Amino acid sequence: LTEEQKRACAYRIIDSGRRAEQLSQKMMELVSLSVEQEINKTVFDTVHLLETVKDIFGEKVVVSCDVKEIFGDETLLCSLISNLVQNALCASDKGKTVNVSVQLLETSAIRISVQDRGCGIPDSHITRLTDPFYRVDKVRSRKNGGAGLGLAICQSIMEMHGGRLK
Image (cartoon, rainbow, N blue to C red; front, side):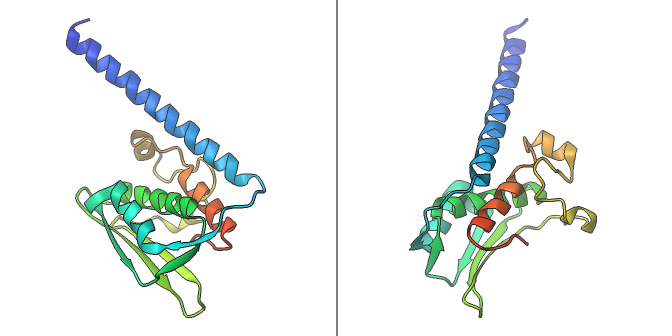
């Protein structure tokens, strides 16, 4: 093989390894969330949570917040928002931003919203979105390294917080 071919093969191997690592991490996260366990709920600064999300995704995310503090597991809620933002970015056209907002509802509940600029999901797929390994667009998900575990993880996180994914 030429040096260029060797380099191309090495990059393919590295990419495959990264995908396998991401899949195993997602599966471990899903398994750990499915076990009956207490989560570490504390009162934490909402702005810090959103700054962490901004640090991960940069200018691709626009945040708004009218809630000073949240009672919950900050690490799990950061994982929730990150999973949703990653999905939203994959569904959006290149260069489009994703909006993340945290709002206090009249019922004193908190709504965390992630809004993309994608084409939407057909109604026939909505009920299956949180099934482990389910993907609406199997070709695009495979190309982007998705395994269909992110929304199942999000569902588990919401249930652990007494909420629901909608």
